[in-house]
Length: 210
Image (cartoon, rainbow, N blue to C red; front, side, top):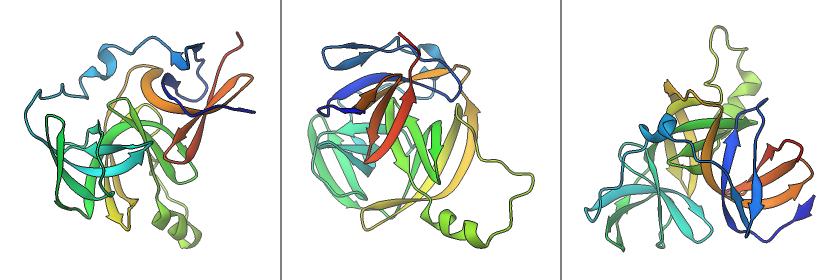
């Protein structure tokens, strides 16, 4: 696998067992954007009005901030995970701390007990460390299955010491498409695949033959 300098890219993430078309140009993975299938889930920006949210992740010098509705937004500012931000124009101010947040997004995949979500075209990794511990002692679940890739979910997370922990997850919809458009960072490429960096979590996307 050939390492690359980390650059922001646009990629179309396809769900498992689906083909994917990706082309490289000027350090970007260029793809066709998904149109109306996901537009309804992400409300338009509110112009110069004040935006308030909770910092849920850091991403290469920027912050991922969850709105009260759970939609992620990139904010270029400095703050700790768990900070409550108030953003007016380009001015961001920390106005408090939060121990819980809601994140709404599309399930891309699960790696172990870590959930990879796409929210407003931004990827976020949400671990479930408690679930990993409880899985050792708990009996196999009967009649219940976790939402699969393509499901739209609302997740409740707790925030402690700068880390997220998934507390609850509810399916609220489904995307009727085999692909979504995401913004991510290339970590490495290899024949037939590209690996993206999602807050330190490696997410490998399979590519079809050229």
